[in-house]
Amino acid sequence: MESEIKVSPSLLAADFSDLRRELDKINASEADWLHLDIMDGVFVPNISFGFPVLKYVAELCRKPLDVHLMIVQPEKFIHEVKALGAMMMNVHFEACPHLHRVVQQIKESGMKAGVTLNPSTPVAMLTDIIEDVDMVLLMSVNPGFGGQKFITHTLQKVRQLRELIDQRGAQALIEVDGGVNSVTAPALVAAGVDVLVAGSAVFKAADMKEAIHQFKILRR
Ligand code: DX5
Ligand code: ZN
Image 1 (cartoon, protein in one colour):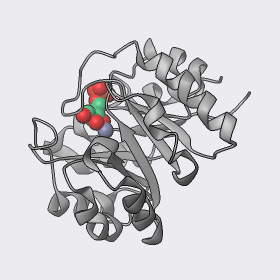
Image 2 (image 1 turned 135 degrees about the vertical axis):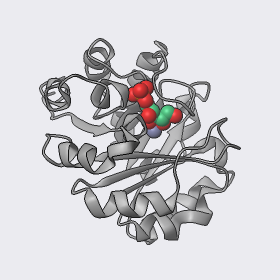
Image 3 (image 1 turned 30 degrees about the horizontal axis):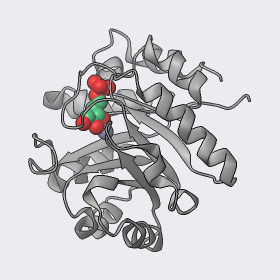
Image 4 (image 1 turned 120 degrees about the horizontal axis):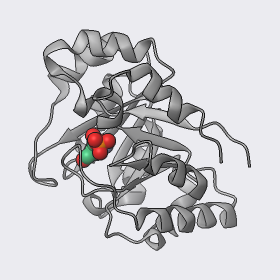
């Protein structure tokens, strides 16, 4: 099946001393979305940036915002994420005992709802929610840090998820996050991924625009 791959660069790997320039480059690129990683030091062992910073990012960025919350009780922040003008809000399966309710609340707010799985969480956990979500974000590293090594088992999870989505006739997109680069991206796309998140591979590239372009020309 021919379908266009979406690219969602992760701002976590950007040069924060010159955020305006980084966002100008993203705006001028073929990137489809901008991926924003919010951490709380509790759900993951790191803290990134919060809403006061993201308010300015949202003002400067012309791409739809793909927000990834690596926090406990993400439902508390639906209003704040919506206020940024975000297109997509991704919450972790592992952080939401009442996931169905949270997904409904995100959609009622007018955003698209994404559910994220840690590397050790099986795809089968989504069996009863797959028809309700707009996207599934598979972590291909343990969340919390950029620049980590891709966990190869993710390829199998992508294939399982593609099968579940196709079986149900569900509409969910498949996004993968962590260690996505010129080596892992072609294999991910072949396995059935729709959206590639890339931090280091985009922001640390000698030519950001070209790095994004190389992901954009992948076809499954
Ligand atoms: C990790 C974040 C990722 C991270 C990816 O917890 O969710 O979005 O920025 O970074 P790279 O692409 O460098 O692995
Ligand atoms: Zn992320």
